[in-house]
Length: 169
Length: 264
Image 1 (cartoon, rainbow over the protein chains, first blue to last red):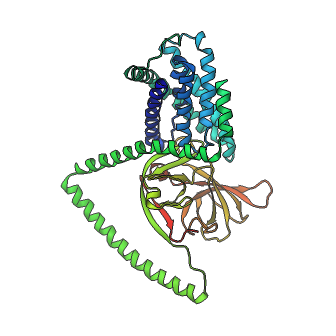
Image 2: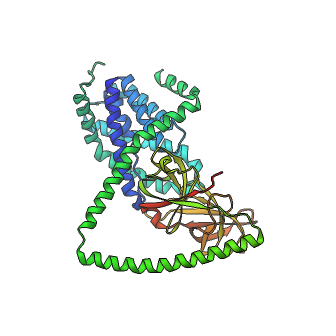
Image 3: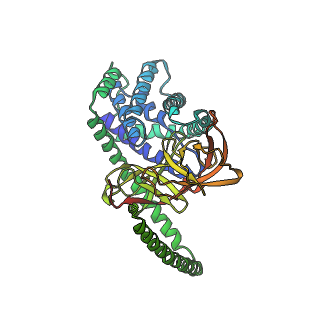
């Protein structure tokens, strides 16, 4: 489980950075969501069981700091992980651009799924969509900018932890 | 298969296990938030050290003037409290709730379109209870929704999940306030329901909304926001409206938790 542990550490760092960014941006009424980054690399490059464990643990980390039923992010990340894993042999997953596009699509899907789960808690729910769409646009821009760096960080961390999985795994 | 198995295990897991796991994961994230907050404080401290001596003397003089006016207010407040106590004793009214003031630094703000929360740097170590009201100089901030070892989570009044019994300035009839819309590039808003038909307000003549004291969580008279719009509800029996909240809520760095002196 060394791969899962190393990937979880990188996800822990990612959550801390996203939380700091959101804290700093609160005055501008902008909120960033980076769910796609929690799943992308694990689903595309890592054997299923270890990548799945990392994604679910990352989801539990997000659940612990959000007012949602515990396990919501974990279930969404786990489902997204399984979906991308089943598609990954059809993708040029060594290309950074392909990985970034997959992460952006994942991020958008996870954001919309979470929005649909939360919208019933908002009075006059329709009025909240402009804010949600604005957050989604900013989140996609931030994820696109950070994804190549984060993939490199995850790869280097796996190398440092001597846990780089083989391609055949 | 693995996904289905994981979901099944989670669904049958006992509540205690889920609660324990959640608390464990939260405590795992807390040191980062607290450390970043301390680093921010240190950064501000060194930034202040760079101010010129003249600026510090000027700030000290302004502070002395403020202290003098606050000292007068404290004396007046003490006299009024004594008068209130005397009248309560005469009328044999039950003693009002008393609160211990616990000031806390804000470690992290999490203001999404779905929820509005902040993490403060005091928790069970300072006896903060779940449900305690949180205030700042502009009025109500929210209430404590989770307490951890040395941090607490505050649910803001702009959070759609928070409801408060409120009154309009100069009126005693209770109405219901709920956090609602968090706009793009604008202050958060709330909604009010069950507003009496004779209450009017608009953006040019807003009315102040304050806590009613009903419900036993918030003391009466704390500012919630300004009513900027009211209209008749669908049934015509009451009115509904919009409340504009203090824009400073989005940038708070320090808040005060009102800890009940006699909880329960």
